[in-house]
Length: 251
Image (cartoon, one colour):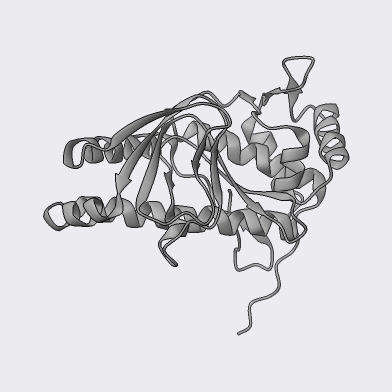
């Protein structure tokens, strides 16, 4: 997600999304590199398929070649908590590196293809091809920045701006993959979005309706699953306008 930071003037600012053309090229280059150097195992997944479970021993990393994936944890009260989303080109499984087992369930949200890469094979291949290690580190850095941005959004934005920021980051992710951003298909229920953003289903529905009333978004279908974004800049400006002032930097 977009990453709010202090801009030195006492107000918060969003780091702009990566240049879409450069991001798309980077994804294609990484996938090509892995295909040439490792020949990963390919696996077709469908909505609801489990890629790996929390607690499973860590052996592999996964790269999403197509489709959409969600990560789910169990909260203390037993409810599922949607932690994050992944798009084409994203790596899955970094959570298994620290303790030798995965800490969340990775579940496909639609039909797609994942590449399965043995971590041991990956490390061995990187000895002769340092570019693999560079790609791995870049993916880790992007994952950290995305998770930090998601946390900042939940902690600093009011409900309506939180939903707007969620849509903005989804659109940014599509742009970075060379896909259209003026209409996105939400492959999530309102309850799942609320779970992800720390909001109730009703709050998510109200926020979407309010965004539609001020013409920041529109709905292409009666079920409101397809969200139209006529002006991505206007959506970004809306989020910017709801950022809380950042504390002054100590001199």
